[in-house]
Length: 269
Image (spheres, rainbow, N blue to C red):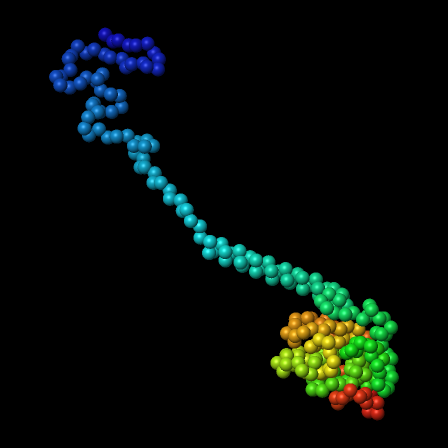
């Protein structure tokens, strides 16, 4: 004989009577819990988290700090690279500009080509002493003979009339006060000596320690280490010539003194 319960979520197993009694002290099959051994006493294993046979998951340790050293280094390198690229782009842009625009961009430069067009016409040769309104002169009438401008360093003043002719040929003429410190003079010499279309000489009565002249341009500075000196030379040397890049700078006057020399035999240009 069998006894069963109606179907449903709490359906109980069918019990089949065999006519035999269970042995004393041993529970029957109906008394054993489903899915495990009889009893929940000592020795019964506890279920583990996550299912049978799984080991507990070790907690993940999260670092609370951040290493700023590598980050700061990366940022610094990035900024340096950006600066180099930016400067290169700016230099390329400046190099593509016409030289006169670059000259006008030099801080403190005076462009007499814009202020007095008659002054910078050129080609006006005349002997004797010439009075200049701008000192040191930057353009205007001048002696037929030019001052030698092959990187010459003069230790005494030279004649304006010869120097202006050198400017017409594309020379940058650097002048300085006679009392300029020796180390400053040495710095100026290093920029000039042995370089074509450059010359250096002392000049009495300057209102600034150093004055640079090219044909139609002038820049006055206080110190020989001023970066604008190199910029002026780079931009205006040869470019400022109104007789072309091949105008002669050799075979010129090499003597010092402020009185022009009219009786010397010299080719004119």
